[in-house]
Image 1: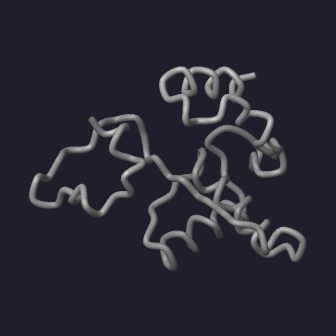
Image 2: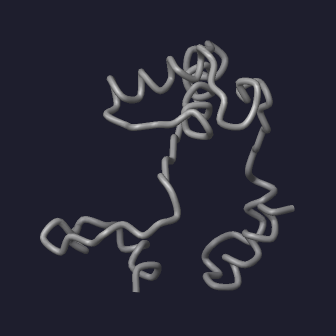
Image 3: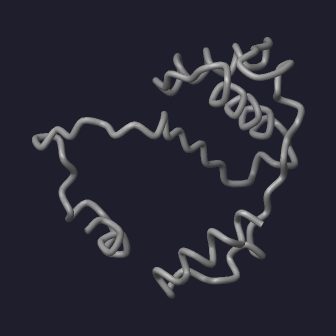
Length: 119
């Protein structure tokens, strides 16, 4: 329901976003990476956190991101899902990051489709 409501809202703001996107998305809730509960860890979570730190230069934690990375790594190692595309979107948190004007990305580096969302 949340995907449907979100898609409807986004479509109202930008009709180029398909209104039926919810029917085109495949979401599977995973319960096998809870590691015993909120803010708890297990061997898979710790291994995923270490992998992210050492191989991807990402700092993950045990509550959410380490568990999500553990799921991605398991799927990536599975022959049935290995050929799929993977996206690990780490938003860190909802706090605004400080803006460094000298490090700002030039508008020329972004696809034109993004310009409507950045004004």
